Length: 105
Image (cartoon, rainbow, N blue to C red; front, side, top):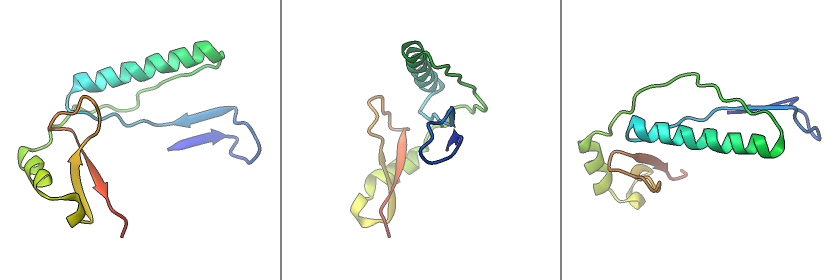
């Protein structure tokens, strides 16, 4: 979700607000992603002089992907279903980190 203020054509927004949903196989990996985002935001703020604030609004512990589901997703080819799963392309991927991929109807 991205909100810009004012939300008008041909106007450079004075404020932009958006949300990021971080998910990974462990809390440590989510914490590392959070630290990376905060470091980039701090650098952008320092480079541009624009204030950037980050507020955590909720947090939930990482949940492992059930081994039976990993097997079911691995066994089914992408081309044979309208929606299926495949391993994430993220560099720190573990078998418990998966993304749903949907083909257009």
